[in-house]
Length: 370
Image (cartoon, rainbow, N blue to C red; front, side, top):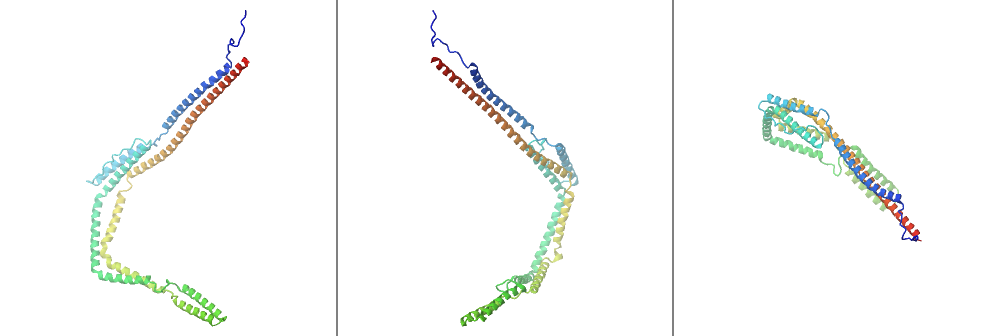
């Protein structure tokens, strides 16, 4: 006899099989996207490192040749100085070495340090070239100046009273030029004085007009007092400064100062100072004749210009490296965020689908129980 069918005997059949498979696939795909984002970011970092390694400064051709030329020029200059001035104290050979190439700031600093050392070495050789001449001329300069100073002191001692009298006269003339003998006012010319007098005259004319209008004894008394005050003020206005007299004072003062200078220096008796000044000029000319236009100077200037170019290239390279690093890091962050966002999106989608399928199955079971 057949057994009756009950709810407990009915086995639940799996439903939404493919949908649940899709949900599980989305979860696995999220993990894959996250791993792919991390892997892509790692690859991007490796590419960035390789790109930064390729961005290095390559010195322009000729750097080694310029260094070799400088060393040869320094050696030749040292030999020439030793032959031209036997027994001269030679400067020490520079110990700073040039780098093989300028690749970064450290190499540039080392090259500049070596360049400065070689420049000092060349300047020492140039000074050694005129060392003997300079020592002799220094003694001559000191002797000429010492003799001139002795002569000046003797003149000052012998001409002291006369010089003091001249100084007193000069001081008196200077005071006359700077004095304000016109009272309240500074010196004024004839036109300025006349303008002021005309102003006072116009005021007096107006007072006369007021007096002609009448008004009684009290008014007339006041007008008379004002007119008397104007007359007093007119006397205060100074006479114009005598420009001719001032010019004579200036000329006399200049002559006295010239006489004082001749008295103290005595012109030809201080010939030693003139000879010393001329000898100094001769020394400068000699130094300019033998210490300039050396081959080593050209080598130094050429190498200095090359290092300046390398400095500018390093600055441009630094900006380029910063730009490449910024863009590479931005790509790395973008890959990480993209992978994480995709993984999160797929994981949320898987959770939503699973929740929907669970809800649908629960509703189906409820329907069957009814």
